[in-house]
Amino acid sequence: MPAYHSSYNNVDSVRVINGIPLLPLMTKTRGPAPYADPTMTSDAIDEALELFRPNSFFKNFEIKGPGDRLMIYIILFISQSLNKLRATTTQAEANKLLYTLAVTNVVIPADIKFPLSQLYPSVKDKMEGDMLRQYLQQVRQETAQRLVALVYSSNGQPTQTPSKWWLCFQKRHFMGKVMN
Image (cartoon, rainbow, N blue to C red; front, side, top):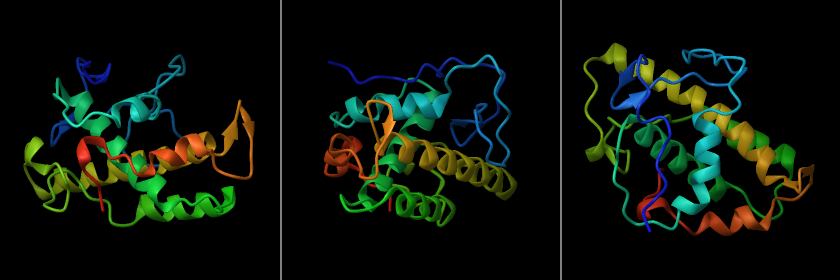
């Protein structure tokens, strides 16, 4: 069975830096991402959160476009975020932990520290690298907010403890890679 791919692989008219498209986001977080159309019901972050669990089981992943590269980055960040949470972490603590994780040490795929850097083209110059870093920081902040809302809910109702169905994916790593 093949892995699930991004529906944003064939999106035209968006800027692509380092193989990552700067897609519109449904967010209130400030940053360089274009604002999403009010009629949009989901964005790339929602897609990555939805596909995180099924794609975590795959050790191989064929990249079919720039949307897949963004999804890989978000999935690796979700995995890193889940590893910060414990069964005793409250929702308020999780918000603080993941916000701190989202804004500190933002690694772009062009960096050698990124686990799958060989799958991404290099950035053209420092200005493009800074723009991508700001975009990915905005993506990370929004992903952290949405992840906390998902992990700390049961049947759509907020809870004080994290869902064991999300925490069980702490040991699973997409393609066997971890972003540090």
